[in-house]
Length: 326
Ligand code: TXA
Ligand code: MG
View 1 (cartoon, helix red, strand yellow):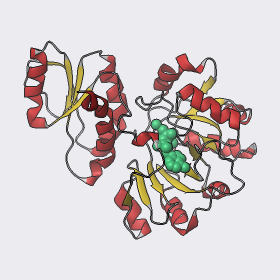
View 2 (view 1 turned 30 degrees about the vertical axis):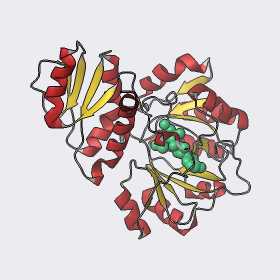
View 3 (view 1 turned 120 degrees about the vertical axis):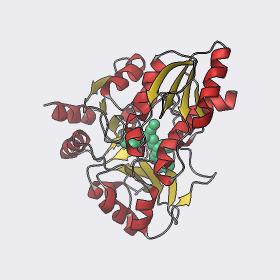
View 4 (view 1 turned 60 degrees about the vertical axis):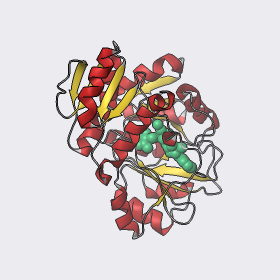
C-alpha cells in the first residue's frame, strides 16, 4: 500500500512528497541529519531557514517541545489543521530541521493522506516529518501533485523517490505560524487559520512579527514569485494600466473580478469574491498565468479586511520582486 511504502521510505531516510490541506510538502525524517540535508539540497533552500516538523498529534508534538497551556489550547482547537506552533525545543529533540534555532515549528496537518503517513511513520518509530512546501526556494508553492514534479524533478537527481497524490489542496496557502517561544504570542505568518480565531482561543491579541524574528523564508519580501512579473493594481486603474502596457507592446494577463474593458488584455481570469475560494486557487492560478509566458500578470488589489490577510500577504510577496526592481 502506498502509505506504508511511503512511511518505510521515510524511515530509510528517503524523501517523500505528500499532500497537506494547505500545500504539498517535501518530507523527510526530522530526526535524521542526512535526510533533512536532502530536503535543503533538493529545495535549494539556505541551511539557516528552519523547517516545520509535522506530527501525528499533540502528544507527538510534546516530544519535540513543551507546548505549554497556550500551545495545548491551540492544538486542541485547531489540530489537525493549518496552524504551526513555534515552541522551545526539548533537550532530546534533534535540531537538524530547525536552522540553528533553539525552537521548533510543529504542525499536525488535516489532510487524510498526510495524517495516515504520519501515523504509519510513528508506528515505525518515527517522531516527526520535516517538510517545507515542495517547491524550489522562492517560487510558487505547489497545491497539486503535478506542481511538485514540475518544480523539483529536475533538481532532485533521483532523490525525490515518491510523490503521494492527494488531489488539489483544500486550503491552498500555507499554515498560520504562531510563535509561542518568547512569552507573548507572535503572529509570524498569516495563513489557513484566521488570526482572530486564534486570539479568541488565547484570550489575548497576537503581536505583530518584529524585525528580530528568526529568518522565515515565507516572510522574505520577495517570495512565492512566478517568473512573469506580477503587479497589483486597483480595480478602477486596471483598464488604464492594461492600455498603457499594450501601448508599450507588452502583453498582460488580468486576474480580476470583472472582464476588463480594455484592448490590451491578452488573457482574463475571473478572480473569486470569497477569500477562502481565492486562497484555494491562488497558487494554481499564478502558475497557470505564469505558463502563458506573457510580459505581466496584473492582479486586482484585494478588498480591505482581515479575512483577506493571508491571500494579500502572498500576493504582495509575489509582486515584491517586480516592485523592487521597477
Ligand atoms: O502549510 C504549511 O505550513 C506548509 C505545509 C507543507 O505544512 N509548510 C510550509 O513550510 O509552508 P515552509 O518551509 O515553506 O515554511 C515554513 C515556515 C518558514 O517561514 C520557516 O522559516 C518557519 O516556518 N519556521 C519553521 N520553524 C521555525 C522556527 N523554529 N522558528 C521560526 N520560524 C520557523
Ligand atoms: Mg514555502
